[in-house]
Image (tube, rainbow, N blue to C red; front, top):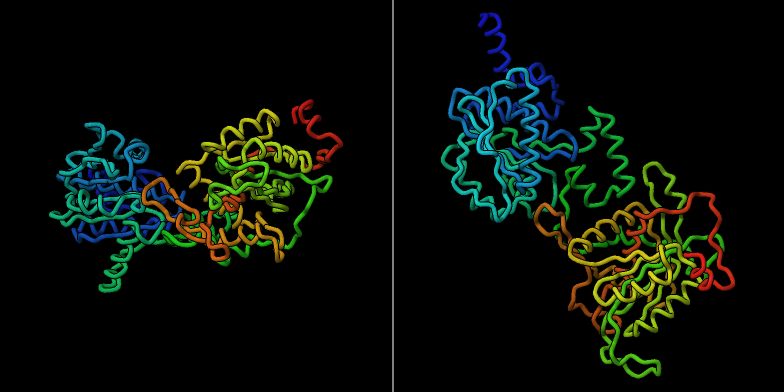
Length: 507
Protein backbone atom coordinates (compact mmCIF):
# COMPACT_ATOMS: atom_id res chain seq x y z
CA UNK A 1 0.00 0.00 0.00
CA UNK A 2 1.39 3.44 -0.92
CA UNK A 3 2.58 5.24 2.25
CA UNK A 4 0.76 8.43 1.30
CA UNK A 5 -2.47 6.55 0.75
CA UNK A 6 -2.02 4.65 4.02
CA UNK A 7 -1.55 7.91 5.94
CA UNK A 8 -4.60 9.44 4.26
CA UNK A 9 -6.65 6.36 5.11
CA UNK A 10 -5.47 6.42 8.73
CA UNK A 11 -6.39 10.10 9.02
CA UNK A 12 -9.76 9.39 7.48
CA UNK A 13 -10.49 6.66 10.01
CA UNK A 14 -9.41 8.88 12.90
CA UNK A 15 -11.96 11.55 11.97
CA UNK A 16 -15.54 10.19 12.00
CA UNK A 17 -17.03 13.24 10.29
CA UNK A 18 -14.42 13.19 7.51
CA UNK A 19 -14.88 9.42 7.20
CA UNK A 20 -18.60 9.93 6.71
CA UNK A 21 -18.22 12.83 4.29
CA UNK A 22 -15.56 11.32 2.05
CA UNK A 23 -16.01 7.56 2.35
CA UNK A 24 -19.82 7.53 2.57
CA UNK A 25 -20.27 10.75 0.58
CA UNK A 26 -22.68 12.09 3.21
CA UNK A 27 -22.31 15.33 5.13
CA UNK A 28 -23.92 15.09 8.53
CA UNK A 29 -26.04 18.00 9.72
CA UNK A 30 -24.95 20.01 12.75
CA UNK A 31 -27.38 18.33 15.15
CA UNK A 32 -26.23 14.92 13.87
CA UNK A 33 -22.54 15.79 14.19
CA UNK A 34 -22.87 16.61 17.89
CA UNK A 35 -24.36 13.19 18.62
CA UNK A 36 -21.78 11.40 16.49
CA UNK A 37 -18.83 13.05 18.25
CA UNK A 38 -20.17 12.36 21.75
CA UNK A 39 -21.08 8.71 21.18
CA UNK A 40 -17.86 7.81 19.36
CA UNK A 41 -15.73 9.60 21.97
CA UNK A 42 -17.42 7.61 24.74
CA UNK A 43 -16.87 4.34 22.88
CA UNK A 44 -13.21 4.99 22.00
CA UNK A 45 -12.26 6.17 25.50
CA UNK A 46 -14.48 3.59 27.20
CA UNK A 47 -16.30 6.21 29.22
CA UNK A 48 -19.40 4.05 29.54
CA UNK A 49 -21.75 7.01 29.23
CA UNK A 50 -25.49 6.70 28.67
CA UNK A 51 -26.92 9.02 26.01
CA UNK A 52 -30.48 9.89 25.10
CA UNK A 53 -31.15 11.15 21.57
CA UNK A 54 -34.56 12.61 20.72
CA UNK A 55 -34.98 13.46 17.06
CA UNK A 56 -38.20 14.39 15.25
CA UNK A 57 -39.61 11.90 12.78
CA UNK A 58 -37.94 11.78 9.36
CA UNK A 59 -35.05 13.99 10.49
CA UNK A 60 -32.15 11.60 9.88
CA UNK A 61 -31.97 9.52 13.09
CA UNK A 62 -31.64 6.19 11.31
CA UNK A 63 -29.09 7.53 8.80
CA UNK A 64 -26.97 8.78 11.69
CA UNK A 65 -27.17 5.41 13.47
CA UNK A 66 -25.97 3.57 10.37
CA UNK A 67 -23.09 6.02 9.85
CA UNK A 68 -21.91 5.66 13.46
CA UNK A 69 -22.16 1.86 13.25
CA UNK A 70 -20.22 1.76 9.96
CA UNK A 71 -17.48 3.96 11.39
CA UNK A 72 -17.10 1.94 14.61
CA UNK A 73 -17.04 -1.40 12.76
CA UNK A 74 -14.25 0.00 10.56
CA UNK A 75 -12.27 1.62 13.36
CA UNK A 76 -12.49 -1.42 15.65
CA UNK A 77 -12.18 -4.07 12.94
CA UNK A 78 -8.92 -5.41 14.43
CA UNK A 79 -10.55 -5.95 17.84
CA UNK A 80 -13.27 -8.22 19.14
CA UNK A 81 -15.66 -5.30 19.54
CA UNK A 82 -19.33 -6.26 19.85
CA UNK A 83 -22.18 -3.83 19.30
CA UNK A 84 -25.75 -4.77 20.14
CA UNK A 85 -28.68 -2.91 18.62
CA UNK A 86 -32.17 -3.58 19.95
CA UNK A 87 -35.38 -2.50 18.21
CA UNK A 88 -38.95 -2.87 19.53
CA UNK A 89 -39.88 -5.53 16.94
CA UNK A 90 -38.04 -7.91 14.62
CA UNK A 91 -40.32 -7.21 11.69
CA UNK A 92 -40.21 -4.55 10.40
CA UNK A 93 -37.92 -2.56 12.70
CA UNK A 94 -34.89 -4.84 13.06
CA UNK A 95 -35.07 -5.75 9.39
CA UNK A 96 -35.26 -2.07 8.42
CA UNK A 97 -32.27 -1.27 10.64
CA UNK A 98 -30.22 -4.02 9.00
CA UNK A 99 -31.15 -2.81 5.52
CA UNK A 100 -30.08 0.74 6.38
CA UNK A 101 -26.70 -0.39 7.69
CA UNK A 102 -26.13 -2.65 4.70
CA UNK A 103 -26.92 0.22 2.32
CA UNK A 104 -24.29 2.41 4.02
CA UNK A 105 -21.72 -0.41 4.08
CA UNK A 106 -22.20 -0.99 0.37
CA UNK A 107 -22.03 2.73 -0.46
CA UNK A 108 -18.97 3.47 1.67
CA UNK A 109 -15.79 3.51 -0.42
CA UNK A 110 -13.79 1.78 2.33
CA UNK A 111 -16.23 -0.81 3.65
CA UNK A 112 -17.96 -1.91 0.46
CA UNK A 113 -15.65 -4.90 0.03
CA UNK A 114 -14.86 -5.53 3.70
CA UNK A 115 -18.18 -6.25 5.39
CA UNK A 116 -19.76 -9.65 5.80
CA UNK A 117 -23.10 -10.91 7.12
CA UNK A 118 -23.55 -14.04 9.21
CA UNK A 119 -26.38 -15.92 10.89
CA UNK A 120 -28.92 -13.57 9.32
CA UNK A 121 -28.65 -10.88 12.00
CA UNK A 122 -24.92 -10.14 12.46
CA UNK A 123 -22.81 -7.76 10.38
CA UNK A 124 -19.00 -7.74 10.70
CA UNK A 125 -15.88 -6.03 9.47
CA UNK A 126 -12.80 -7.97 10.47
CA UNK A 127 -13.34 -9.11 14.05
CA UNK A 128 -15.83 -6.38 14.96
CA UNK A 129 -19.51 -7.30 14.94
CA UNK A 130 -22.92 -5.74 15.37
CA UNK A 131 -25.88 -7.88 16.47
CA UNK A 132 -29.48 -6.88 15.69
CA UNK A 133 -32.02 -8.10 18.25
CA UNK A 134 -35.73 -7.66 18.89
CA UNK A 135 -36.86 -6.05 22.13
CA UNK A 136 -40.41 -7.40 21.83
CA UNK A 137 -41.77 -8.78 25.13
CA UNK A 138 -41.73 -12.36 23.83
CA UNK A 139 -38.24 -12.21 22.26
CA UNK A 140 -35.63 -14.54 23.77
CA UNK A 141 -32.44 -12.48 23.67
CA UNK A 142 -30.78 -13.38 26.96
CA UNK A 143 -27.05 -14.05 26.66
CA UNK A 144 -25.85 -11.45 24.14
CA UNK A 145 -23.00 -9.16 25.22
CA UNK A 146 -22.43 -5.55 24.19
CA UNK A 147 -18.73 -5.12 24.85
CA UNK A 148 -18.51 -1.77 23.05
CA UNK A 149 -21.91 -0.18 22.45
CA UNK A 150 -25.52 -0.94 23.33
CA UNK A 151 -28.16 0.84 21.25
CA UNK A 152 -31.89 0.83 21.94
CA UNK A 153 -33.75 2.23 18.97
CA UNK A 154 -37.27 3.66 19.37
CA UNK A 155 -36.70 3.24 23.09
CA UNK A 156 -40.10 4.75 23.85
CA UNK A 157 -41.62 1.52 22.50
CA UNK A 158 -39.47 -0.96 24.45
CA UNK A 159 -41.05 -1.92 27.77
CA UNK A 160 -38.96 -0.86 30.79
CA UNK A 161 -39.36 -4.31 32.34
CA UNK A 162 -38.00 -5.99 29.20
CA UNK A 163 -35.02 -3.66 29.17
CA UNK A 164 -34.18 -4.12 32.84
CA UNK A 165 -34.45 -7.91 32.73
CA UNK A 166 -33.03 -8.88 29.35
CA UNK A 167 -31.25 -5.93 27.73
CA UNK A 168 -29.45 -3.91 30.42
CA UNK A 169 -27.35 -6.90 31.56
CA UNK A 170 -25.76 -7.03 28.10
CA UNK A 171 -23.64 -3.99 28.98
CA UNK A 172 -23.41 -4.45 32.74
CA UNK A 173 -19.99 -6.15 32.86
CA UNK A 174 -18.33 -4.28 30.00
CA UNK A 175 -18.88 -0.60 30.79
CA UNK A 176 -20.24 -0.26 27.28
CA UNK A 177 -21.61 3.04 26.06
CA UNK A 178 -25.42 3.05 25.87
CA UNK A 179 -27.55 5.10 23.50
CA UNK A 180 -31.32 5.38 23.75
CA UNK A 181 -32.73 6.66 20.46
CA UNK A 182 -36.30 7.72 19.88
CA UNK A 183 -39.00 10.35 19.80
CA UNK A 184 -40.80 11.75 22.79
CA UNK A 185 -43.95 9.97 23.91
CA UNK A 186 -45.38 9.61 27.41
CA UNK A 187 -43.61 10.15 30.72
CA UNK A 188 -43.75 6.46 31.71
CA UNK A 189 -41.72 5.04 28.80
CA UNK A 190 -38.19 3.65 28.93
CA UNK A 191 -37.00 6.62 26.88
CA UNK A 192 -38.53 9.12 29.32
CA UNK A 193 -37.01 7.31 32.30
CA UNK A 194 -33.53 7.28 30.77
CA UNK A 195 -33.97 10.91 29.71
CA UNK A 196 -34.52 11.95 33.34
CA UNK A 197 -31.50 9.93 34.48
CA UNK A 198 -29.27 11.36 31.72
CA UNK A 199 -30.30 14.92 32.55
CA UNK A 200 -29.49 14.38 36.20
CA UNK A 201 -26.06 12.92 35.37
CA UNK A 202 -25.45 15.74 32.92
CA UNK A 203 -26.25 18.31 35.58
CA UNK A 204 -23.91 16.64 38.06
CA UNK A 205 -20.76 16.48 35.93
CA UNK A 206 -21.47 18.89 33.05
CA UNK A 207 -20.86 16.26 30.36
CA UNK A 208 -23.48 16.43 27.60
CA UNK A 209 -25.62 13.32 27.51
CA UNK A 210 -28.99 14.53 26.19
CA UNK A 211 -29.43 15.51 22.55
CA UNK A 212 -32.97 16.71 21.88
CA UNK A 213 -33.92 18.69 18.83
CA UNK A 214 -37.22 19.81 17.41
CA UNK A 215 -38.69 20.33 13.99
CA UNK A 216 -37.55 23.95 14.15
CA UNK A 217 -33.92 22.84 14.61
CA UNK A 218 -34.19 20.60 11.56
CA UNK A 219 -36.01 23.30 9.59
CA UNK A 220 -33.04 25.63 10.09
CA UNK A 221 -30.84 23.24 8.10
CA UNK A 222 -33.44 21.63 5.82
CA UNK A 223 -36.15 24.09 4.71
CA UNK A 224 -38.01 21.30 2.89
CA UNK A 225 -38.45 19.56 6.22
CA UNK A 226 -40.12 22.67 7.58
CA UNK A 227 -42.66 22.54 4.77
CA UNK A 228 -43.33 18.88 5.59
CA UNK A 229 -43.95 19.68 9.27
CA UNK A 230 -46.19 22.61 8.35
CA UNK A 231 -48.32 20.17 6.41
CA UNK A 232 -48.56 17.84 9.41
CA UNK A 233 -49.58 20.73 11.65
CA UNK A 234 -52.24 21.84 9.18
CA UNK A 235 -53.58 18.29 9.00
CA UNK A 236 -53.44 17.39 12.70
CA UNK A 237 -53.09 20.63 14.68
CA UNK A 238 -50.09 21.90 16.66
CA UNK A 239 -51.46 20.52 19.95
CA UNK A 240 -52.26 17.07 18.58
CA UNK A 241 -50.33 14.50 20.67
CA UNK A 242 -48.60 13.11 17.57
CA UNK A 243 -47.37 16.54 16.50
CA UNK A 244 -46.23 17.53 19.98
CA UNK A 245 -44.30 14.34 20.59
CA UNK A 246 -43.03 13.27 17.19
CA UNK A 247 -42.04 16.66 15.80
CA UNK A 248 -41.38 18.90 18.82
CA UNK A 249 -39.99 16.40 21.36
CA UNK A 250 -42.68 17.23 23.92
CA UNK A 251 -43.90 14.51 26.28
CA UNK A 252 -47.64 13.90 26.51
CA UNK A 253 -49.72 12.57 29.38
CA UNK A 254 -50.07 8.79 29.45
CA UNK A 255 -53.55 9.07 30.88
CA UNK A 256 -56.07 11.73 31.84
CA UNK A 257 -58.92 13.70 30.38
CA UNK A 258 -58.99 13.52 26.58
CA UNK A 259 -60.79 16.84 26.19
CA UNK A 260 -59.30 19.47 28.50
CA UNK A 261 -60.84 22.96 28.54
CA UNK A 262 -58.71 24.30 25.69
CA UNK A 263 -59.73 21.40 23.44
CA UNK A 264 -63.40 21.74 24.39
CA UNK A 265 -63.23 25.43 23.53
CA UNK A 266 -62.10 24.50 20.02
CA UNK A 267 -65.18 22.31 19.64
CA UNK A 268 -67.72 25.05 20.43
CA UNK A 269 -69.16 26.87 17.45
CA UNK A 270 -71.23 30.01 17.11
CA UNK A 271 -73.92 28.65 14.79
CA UNK A 272 -77.47 27.64 15.70
CA UNK A 273 -79.11 24.26 15.78
CA UNK A 274 -81.24 23.43 12.73
CA UNK A 275 -84.59 21.70 12.58
CA UNK A 276 -84.39 20.95 8.87
CA UNK A 277 -81.94 20.94 5.98
CA UNK A 278 -80.95 24.11 4.21
CA UNK A 279 -81.12 23.73 0.40
CA UNK A 280 -77.71 23.69 -1.20
CA UNK A 281 -75.85 22.36 1.85
CA UNK A 282 -74.18 18.95 2.18
CA UNK A 283 -74.99 16.83 5.23
CA UNK A 284 -73.79 13.58 6.77
CA UNK A 285 -75.23 11.27 9.43
CA UNK A 286 -73.05 9.77 12.18
CA UNK A 287 -74.73 6.90 14.03
CA UNK A 288 -73.53 5.05 17.12
CA UNK A 289 -75.76 1.99 17.58
CA UNK A 290 -76.87 0.54 20.90
CA UNK A 291 -78.60 -2.77 21.56
CA UNK A 292 -82.37 -2.77 21.55
CA UNK A 293 -84.33 -3.41 24.75
CA UNK A 294 -86.32 -6.64 24.66
CA UNK A 295 -89.31 -4.95 26.33
CA UNK A 296 -89.26 -1.88 24.11
CA UNK A 297 -92.63 -1.44 22.45
CA UNK A 298 -94.69 1.07 20.61
CA UNK A 299 -97.15 1.55 23.50
CA UNK A 300 -94.72 3.33 25.80
CA UNK A 301 -94.34 0.51 28.34
CA UNK A 302 -91.35 0.84 30.73
CA UNK A 303 -87.93 -0.24 29.54
CA UNK A 304 -86.36 -3.33 31.08
CA UNK A 305 -83.03 -1.55 31.39
CA UNK A 306 -83.54 2.22 31.32
CA UNK A 307 -79.88 2.87 32.19
CA UNK A 308 -78.54 1.22 29.05
CA UNK A 309 -76.63 3.16 26.42
CA UNK A 310 -78.53 4.63 23.50
CA UNK A 311 -78.37 4.90 19.76
CA UNK A 312 -77.05 8.36 18.99
CA UNK A 313 -77.29 10.31 15.75
CA UNK A 314 -75.18 13.37 15.02
CA UNK A 315 -76.00 15.37 11.88
CA UNK A 316 -73.20 17.50 10.46
CA UNK A 317 -73.09 20.16 7.79
CA UNK A 318 -70.07 19.37 5.63
CA UNK A 319 -68.11 22.34 4.29
CA UNK A 320 -66.02 21.03 1.42
CA UNK A 321 -64.29 24.34 0.66
CA UNK A 322 -61.42 23.35 2.99
CA UNK A 323 -60.70 20.32 0.80
CA UNK A 324 -59.16 22.82 -1.60
CA UNK A 325 -56.61 23.95 1.00
CA UNK A 326 -53.30 22.39 -0.13
CA UNK A 327 -52.33 21.65 3.48
CA UNK A 328 -55.67 20.65 5.05
CA UNK A 329 -57.16 18.70 2.10
CA UNK A 330 -60.21 17.72 4.16
CA UNK A 331 -63.69 19.10 4.91
CA UNK A 332 -64.84 21.05 7.95
CA UNK A 333 -67.89 20.03 9.95
CA UNK A 334 -70.64 21.81 11.86
CA UNK A 335 -72.97 19.81 14.07
CA UNK A 336 -76.49 21.01 13.28
CA UNK A 337 -78.63 18.48 15.15
CA UNK A 338 -78.43 15.31 17.25
CA UNK A 339 -80.90 12.71 18.41
CA UNK A 340 -80.91 9.93 20.98
CA UNK A 341 -82.98 6.72 21.13
CA UNK A 342 -82.85 4.54 24.24
CA UNK A 343 -83.98 0.92 24.04
CA UNK A 344 -85.55 1.45 20.62
CA UNK A 345 -86.21 -1.67 18.55
CA UNK A 346 -84.03 -1.61 15.45
CA UNK A 347 -86.97 -2.16 13.12
CA UNK A 348 -88.56 1.04 14.40
CA UNK A 349 -85.20 2.80 14.44
CA UNK A 350 -84.62 1.86 10.81
CA UNK A 351 -87.89 3.49 9.75
CA UNK A 352 -87.13 6.65 11.73
CA UNK A 353 -83.66 6.92 10.24
CA UNK A 354 -85.04 6.53 6.73
CA UNK A 355 -87.55 9.27 7.47
CA UNK A 356 -84.73 11.56 8.63
CA UNK A 357 -82.73 10.66 5.54
CA UNK A 358 -85.65 11.83 3.46
CA UNK A 359 -85.62 15.18 5.25
CA UNK A 360 -81.88 15.79 5.31
CA UNK A 361 -80.67 13.79 2.29
CA UNK A 362 -77.20 13.07 3.76
CA UNK A 363 -74.39 12.51 1.32
CA UNK A 364 -72.91 9.82 3.61
CA UNK A 365 -74.11 7.84 6.62
CA UNK A 366 -71.34 6.59 8.91
CA UNK A 367 -72.73 3.86 11.16
CA UNK A 368 -71.36 1.71 13.94
CA UNK A 369 -71.61 -1.80 12.46
CA UNK A 370 -70.25 -3.61 15.52
CA UNK A 371 -72.23 -6.54 16.87
CA UNK A 372 -75.94 -5.74 16.87
CA UNK A 373 -75.25 -2.68 14.72
CA UNK A 374 -74.30 -4.90 11.78
CA UNK A 375 -77.90 -5.72 10.97
CA UNK A 376 -79.09 -2.12 11.00
CA UNK A 377 -76.08 -1.08 8.92
CA UNK A 378 -76.85 -3.81 6.39
CA UNK A 379 -80.48 -2.72 5.99
CA UNK A 380 -79.41 0.90 5.49
CA UNK A 381 -76.79 -0.15 2.92
CA UNK A 382 -79.49 -1.88 0.88
CA UNK A 383 -81.77 1.14 1.05
CA UNK A 384 -78.99 3.67 0.35
CA UNK A 385 -76.39 1.94 -1.82
CA UNK A 386 -73.04 3.69 -2.00
CA UNK A 387 -73.80 6.13 0.83
CA UNK A 388 -73.44 4.01 3.97
CA UNK A 389 -70.00 3.70 5.59
CA UNK A 390 -70.00 0.88 8.18
CA UNK A 391 -67.44 1.24 10.98
CA UNK A 392 -66.59 -1.81 13.10
CA UNK A 393 -65.19 -1.03 16.54
CA UNK A 394 -62.36 -2.98 18.10
CA UNK A 395 -59.35 -1.93 20.18
CA UNK A 396 -57.36 -0.90 17.10
CA UNK A 397 -60.11 0.92 15.21
CA UNK A 398 -61.38 2.76 18.26
CA UNK A 399 -57.84 3.95 18.97
CA UNK A 400 -57.49 5.12 15.37
CA UNK A 401 -60.82 6.92 15.57
CA UNK A 402 -59.74 8.70 18.72
CA UNK A 403 -56.48 9.95 17.21
CA UNK A 404 -58.24 11.00 13.99
CA UNK A 405 -61.05 12.77 15.83
CA UNK A 406 -58.44 14.74 17.78
CA UNK A 407 -56.95 15.82 14.45
CA UNK A 408 -60.33 17.15 13.29
CA UNK A 409 -60.83 18.97 16.59
CA UNK A 410 -57.29 20.38 16.86
CA UNK A 411 -57.44 21.84 13.35
CA UNK A 412 -60.69 23.66 14.19
CA UNK A 413 -62.72 21.62 11.73
CA UNK A 414 -65.31 20.34 14.23
CA UNK A 415 -67.78 22.86 15.63
CA UNK A 416 -70.85 22.14 17.70
CA UNK A 417 -73.93 24.34 17.72
CA UNK A 418 -74.68 26.81 20.49
CA UNK A 419 -76.18 25.24 23.55
CA UNK A 420 -79.44 26.46 25.03
CA UNK A 421 -81.09 25.64 28.31
CA UNK A 422 -83.45 22.70 28.02
CA UNK A 423 -81.57 20.91 25.25
CA UNK A 424 -81.01 17.74 27.26
CA UNK A 425 -79.15 15.87 24.54
CA UNK A 426 -76.72 18.74 24.09
CA UNK A 427 -76.07 18.99 27.83
CA UNK A 428 -75.52 15.24 27.97
CA UNK A 429 -73.08 15.39 25.05
CA UNK A 430 -70.90 17.93 26.83
CA UNK A 431 -70.96 15.95 30.09
CA UNK A 432 -69.72 12.94 28.13
CA UNK A 433 -66.99 15.06 26.54
CA UNK A 434 -65.86 16.49 29.88
CA UNK A 435 -65.73 13.05 31.53
CA UNK A 436 -63.99 11.21 28.69
CA UNK A 437 -60.70 9.68 29.86
CA UNK A 438 -57.82 8.30 27.83
CA UNK A 439 -54.93 5.93 28.42
CA UNK A 440 -52.02 5.35 26.06
CA UNK A 441 -50.94 1.71 26.01
CA UNK A 442 -47.15 1.11 26.04
CA UNK A 443 -45.71 -0.35 22.86
CA UNK A 444 -45.08 0.48 19.20
CA UNK A 445 -48.76 0.44 18.18
CA UNK A 446 -49.47 3.92 19.64
CA UNK A 447 -52.77 2.49 20.86
CA UNK A 448 -55.10 4.63 22.95
CA UNK A 449 -58.01 3.53 25.11
CA UNK A 450 -60.58 6.25 25.50
CA UNK A 451 -64.14 6.77 26.64
CA UNK A 452 -66.25 7.54 29.67
CA UNK A 453 -65.32 5.19 32.56
CA UNK A 454 -67.82 2.34 32.90
CA UNK A 455 -68.78 3.01 36.50
CA UNK A 456 -69.12 6.78 36.26
CA UNK A 457 -72.54 8.19 37.07
CA UNK A 458 -74.09 11.27 35.51
CA UNK A 459 -74.16 14.05 38.14
CA UNK A 460 -77.37 15.39 36.58
CA UNK A 461 -79.43 12.17 36.59
CA UNK A 462 -77.58 9.79 38.87
CA UNK A 463 -77.63 7.14 36.14
CA UNK A 464 -74.58 5.61 34.50
CA UNK A 465 -72.94 8.04 32.11
CA UNK A 466 -72.23 6.60 28.67
CA UNK A 467 -70.33 7.97 25.68
CA UNK A 468 -72.80 7.23 22.88
CA UNK A 469 -73.22 10.87 21.83
CA UNK A 470 -69.47 11.39 21.93
CA UNK A 471 -68.76 8.26 19.86
CA UNK A 472 -71.37 9.37 17.36
CA UNK A 473 -69.65 12.75 17.01
CA UNK A 474 -66.22 11.13 16.74
CA UNK A 475 -67.35 9.17 13.68
CA UNK A 476 -66.97 12.47 11.82
CA UNK A 477 -63.30 11.52 11.43
CA UNK A 478 -64.33 8.74 9.03
CA UNK A 479 -65.58 11.41 6.63
CA UNK A 480 -62.06 12.82 6.21
CA UNK A 481 -61.08 9.83 4.06
CA UNK A 482 -64.09 9.98 1.73
CA UNK A 483 -64.53 11.49 -1.72
CA UNK A 484 -66.67 14.60 -1.92
CA UNK A 485 -68.37 16.38 -4.85
CA UNK A 486 -66.24 18.90 -6.67
CA UNK A 487 -66.62 22.52 -5.69
CA UNK A 488 -69.28 24.13 -7.82
CA UNK A 489 -71.16 20.85 -8.39
CA UNK A 490 -74.96 20.99 -8.29
CA UNK A 491 -76.32 21.38 -4.78
CA UNK A 492 -78.03 18.51 -3.01
CA UNK A 493 -81.63 19.75 -2.54
CA UNK A 494 -84.52 17.82 -0.95
CA UNK A 495 -87.28 16.83 -3.35
CA UNK A 496 -90.91 15.82 -3.02
CA UNK A 497 -90.43 12.06 -2.67
CA UNK A 498 -86.81 11.52 -1.60
CA UNK A 499 -87.08 7.85 -0.64
CA UNK A 500 -88.61 6.90 -3.95
CA UNK A 501 -85.96 8.83 -5.83
CA UNK A 502 -83.17 7.27 -3.78
CA UNK A 503 -84.43 3.79 -4.66
CA UNK A 504 -84.67 4.69 -8.36
CA UNK A 505 -81.41 6.63 -8.73
CA UNK A 506 -79.11 4.71 -6.38
CA UNK A 507 -78.52 7.82 -4.26
